[in-house]
Image 1: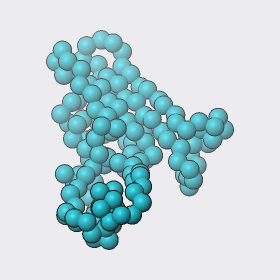
Image 2 (image 1 turned 90 degrees about the horizontal axis):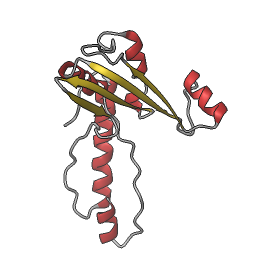
Image 3 (image 1 turned 180 degrees about the vertical axis):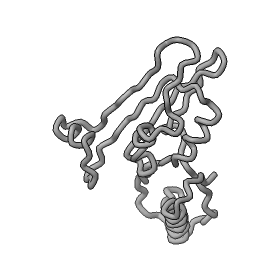
Length: 161
């Protein structure tokens, strides 16, 4: 967008977008890496926020922007956190698809450790090239966002790769 704005001689700006990741991507990773040894939640307090759950009440009381929780297994081989079909783990993912939460997972795969981080991944889609037509660019981004929201509200948690 900044390239199109610059070519038109307009004032460039920073475009701030929170990239989010659908729960389906987490589930796929868990299927491939079932021995999860570490689960970290990083809860962010956006301003303003409508959601005032216990985490955010604590964060506001402490004037904190983030809250981090880490769950780990015992250090013995073969032990795994109970994350599959676990309602408590699923509740721990609430806020992931709205950008209020980041998670990091660590799993054992043979002798190796494998990690997953929502900070490094995001759902994404391609928009058509709009050249120097800034209005077309904004419309293309808007259409992509509307399609993304409609897909998520329809219950399809699939990714847009």
